[in-house]
Each structure stands twice: as C-alpha cells, then as structure tokens.
Image (cartoon, rainbow, N blue to C red):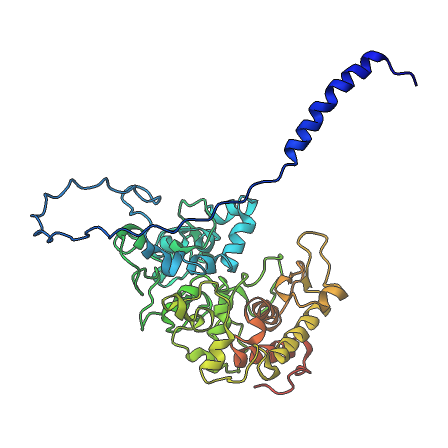
Length: 455
C-alpha cells in the first residue's frame, strides 16, 4: 500500500504529543502525608433548667362542636355507635344469624317474584308472610266476611265462624305492607319507646320485646276446634317466648271442621294442612285423632320456652341472645342431661325408625292414588323415584278422590302433617308414633310393619 507524504507528516506530529500524555499519566504518585493528632475536646456547655412556674387559671370553655349527622334510620333516630354492634350488628351477630335462616332465604328467593303480591295482598297468606303480619294480628286488624271474626285474635287464632255462611273461614291479611319478609320488626315490638334504633340506648335483654303475649301463663291458639260447628280453637300450651313460633307455624286448618265423618273429597293439591305445621305436632294436639285412642307427649313438651329451647339457645359470646338462625342445636340435647352421648338427632336410631314409619304410610296412601308431586294437571301418583326420595314435604294431594271416610281422610291429613312438620318425628316422638300407627292401620287394616305395637 502506498502512503502519502501528507499523512506521514501528520502522524509524525501526533506521536510526540501522545507519548507525552502517556508518560504523564503513568508517572508515580507521591506518598500520602501522615495524619495529624486529634485536637482536644472542648468542655460541655451549661444545661441548667429554670424552676417550673405555677399553672395559670383555666381558660373559658370553647363553643360546642357541630352535632354529628343524624343516623340512616331517619329523622329522630340516633347515629350508629359501638353499642349498636352487639348483639345485632356485630360479626356473627343476630343480623348475620338471621341471614342464614330459612326466613331470610325465603324472602330472597321470592323477592320481586309473583308470590309476593299474593302473600301481602288481602288473602290469608299475609297473616304470616307480610312484614307487619304479627303487628296487624296482635292489634286485631284482620279481614273477615260478615260481622264476627276470630274468637281469640289476641292469642293468634286465624279461623272464625263466618256470620254470613255459618261456616269456618280463615281471616285475611288487612295490612298495607308490600314486603313479604319475616324479619326483626315482624316478631319484635319496634315502638319508639323500646326500639334501640330510636331510643339510642344500649341493648339489654328484654328491651326489644316480642309482639305476641309471652308471659308465664300466656297460650297461643291452634285452629283445631273442640267440636263440629264451633270455631273455638285449642290452647297450645304455655310456652312463653315459644308462643311467637306457634302464631305462624301451625296448620291453619281446623281439622275438626275440615274432615267430616263420611264422603270426604280430596279436592285440590292444597287440601290439608299448610306447610310448616310444626306446632300441631310439637304440642301433640293438632293431628286427626282416632276415636277411642288416647294421645300423649314426649319429654320435649316440658321445655319452658318450647321451640326456643332447641332452635334458639342462648349464645354466650353474643351477650346471651338466642341464635337467630333458628337451626336446632344438638348441644341442647346433650347439655340438658337428656341425651348426653348424642352426636346427631337420630338418637338411638329413633328418628330413622319414625321416618321409616312415615314412609310406610306414604306408600299406603300412594297405592290408593291419593298422593302426587305434580303441581298442575295431568296429575300422577308418586313415581318410583319420587317414592324413594326423602323430600316428603313436597308431596301433596292428587285431586279427584271422593267418598273417603273420616278415618281415611284423617290418615291423609296426618301424613301431610308428619311430612311437613315433624322433623322426622323429633319434635314429639311419642305423638308421632301414635299417629303413624293409627293412620297406617286405618288404610291397610293392619298394624304397620315398622311399628307392630302402638306406643
């Protein structure tokens, strides 16, 4: 390669400069000088504090602060305070318990549905399903045909002997609520003088009383009358707080007048006791009783508060207020000294045995063509699969059968009562077994295979 003379001249000029820079950069550093001795520390300055003077006179009180906002409950209500949290609004308090109950589930399932209008309209349904149901009934505010109403509305009686027809009729709801919900104010008196939301007082036991009479001598009324042609009902027993349950959880039918001695007709799928007739079983009073037989009760009927003892035991961690989920607690059975080793409600296999007896009655009635699961025509008897399931409470009458004797119709009535309100017999084991025995024998002519001897 040929290099030009000009390039060589530039290169020659640069080399000395570059070499100079390199030699300067590579020169050796001198040694660091030695560190000198530390200087002496000066003396600390004075820190003396003067004597504390006497306190001056108190100043004038400042103007009061702005009042807090009114609570969400409306004009006149107090704001939410920590006292509101227990026992109702705290974690796992009464409100949360209620939200786990069937009462709440029914409200949510039907919210905005077609049934709500029928439950709160001028029909019998609103007497239990409307939000102000008990409030209206306690006040005697019900709709009746004619001039005479229930004999004892103050004890929860719904049926009456209509002055226009001389027949037993059922009172209709007369309130104005459009809400079908069984909630706090349905059962508890929310008057201004005792409602903690309005008084602002801290809740104490008994300060939010039940609407229904619940004293030691108060009794609720079942619809079952003492004789045909009367509508006097039956005193259910003295169950204090349990009276609140009985006001709604009953058959609503006056079986004394509902079933005649002869020629009974199964007219519709709504024939028989209403759903949830637990009180008729628990009290041992509401079933169809066969002539010549006596009927007794189990030891459960000795509970001071009836249904409440098992379904709403006191919750110690919640200020001793009863459980508002209304679910039965097996702990009640074990701690009361009755069934100390019970793990569930099938104590000694008793519940299983009673359920088998109810199933035997179910089969006998279905063989007659008197039961169905259909909710509209064409109706059909229970299928093999339906007859094998445990959803007895969903069975209803297959319409069309006529000419039944009183005892035959009584067996059908008792089956629906047991299927819908006995909890597999647990509510009143002795009474349930007596009804099973008498009802099966009236249909088949022989004692039940599951219960060969009447208790």
